[in-house]
Image (cartoon, helix red, strand yellow):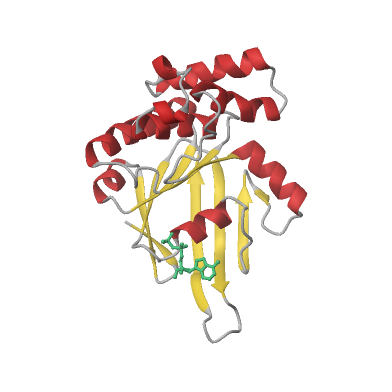
Length: 227
Ligand code: ADP
């Protein structure tokens, strides 16, 4: 049995608590994610997928329940501890790439590593390796505006993995792409996950992509259910 790298225990989240507009978005969600598995998080828009990913990624604290990363309970810890864990263990990708426009594809991947203390030559070498895996190495020296949407998103995946996180959290990572590009970009994501042994939680409402992952969990009425 692989190591559990992310565990959500009875996680709850309210918005506008104690107001007439209060909503209880997440109502006791449980999830265990093991190293090397890719799990689809499926639900209609507005069901709470982003909310759940933010709590899993320690960007937002649950109102009840706990979030454990690598067996360590972190949801109640200080900002400093959560930031450290997030930087070391978690990579994020979003629907929009958020690459820095004034830097090349390769520099966008190297910069987070250099910010973490890795030397420039090593950061660039590791960035090139990641670009090779996703098939964008030939565009390494181009700025984001010179890349296609699919290429931009593949570079964003590499950037999310640059610091070798254990967990990848992806929020509709192909939601902004046409179906053919979406398939290619998803293939690249799957290859990256397989090659790095990451645990990945990928929110999507594309059922075909969801079916290609190891497991599907649905967010239904604020609870996570299998299948
Ligand atoms: P999804 O990612 O599945 O589309 P979200 O997690 O973004 O869903 O949102 C779930 C629900 O919570 C929605 O009804 C949304 O309007 C509401 N919501 C999200 N963020 C906030 C917030 N900061 N304040 C109030 N309501 C919010």
